[in-house]
Image 1 (cartoon, rainbow, N blue to C red):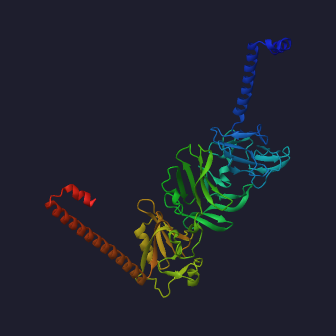
Image 2 (cartoon, rainbow, N blue to C red):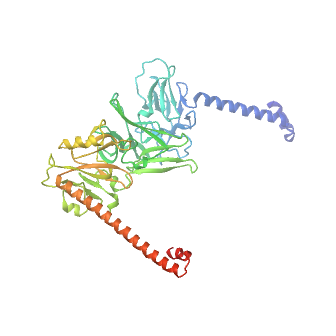
Length: 502
């Protein structure tokens, strides 16, 4: 066929027969399509001993075309890394990096299954080892690496499909749905997020986001080893310090706290929605959602977002009220006073508050004052008893003279399950306008009596205002009724009265 076309072309270029040309083009197209499809069918989402990834545009794509894995350069850097990103995200916001601490400075990188059946990254014709899954594999069977639609890169034993290693156990700076964050007491594995150093360097930065299992578990955003922001404890539905999680119909969260592990996992209610949690190099914790129409990431919430979000913005035994910034956002808990009145006057609440002097706090008629809409104090030193209700919790705290405050553990579950008690300084508390829980602060008998009187006076004042308002309305009604009767006797119509009172 090709000889016939060439002969016709040289004899008379304008007389090339159309039918042979079309058949030749069709045959060539089928061959190219066959080669393309055969490549995809053998290596679309998998790395095998016979199929590696080179830094020449090679990628693997999960079966449902949700995630892609390949080489990338972050920001303005020329260094090369292996990363995973959402397949439809043209900006390639990378959600996981393999060699974040060991970049490649050229395009000679190869990701393959090595002789030890580990997934490994090499440079310079596989002579320089850069990164590896680095696990001990006793089986003599081959291993394969597969990118799942969940975004999890797994190393499998090829015959049994047993998972030998998975990227979900080693997060970088982003948590995606189905990824677990937390600590396994059985294996010691701690899954947490660590920020990039900069937009150009995915190496481990200064900020980390991890669970603290002490007391009643919470998550913290740390700068180095110092807390910068605290999520608060689990309410039964969400973190108490993240009101934006309330009523979310996008993600279902599962919190586990038992003898084997403490962890949090998020699962999307709609698979078409893409939402992630990122620990940024700027020191913020952010939830981002993908806008498919605009083809960009949109911020849903971030923290810390205001002064009261920062850990210990107001010192011990005080709380932060963002609605009182005109005067001073820090306030002492009932029964406490500023430790340094001079610093407090200068709007410096770092030293916090101390118990008022001369108070008797043990079996001397003391009680509790309720502070509403609270993000409960740091629970890392709190004691928890999930078998008690709120009334039993009060009795338990009252019997223990060292107990300074109590509240419900799962206060957003019907019946307010569980009891939290604090026995030292109350740290990092704040109020919300439309969220938070009731916290009960131990006060002495005199302080309790003052709060009761203030509450009674407030109730009396409100009742007096109500009586005054009702009396005034009665007087106005009588006045207009008399006017109406007088005008009616003069022949004024009822419509005029309606017009008058309107």
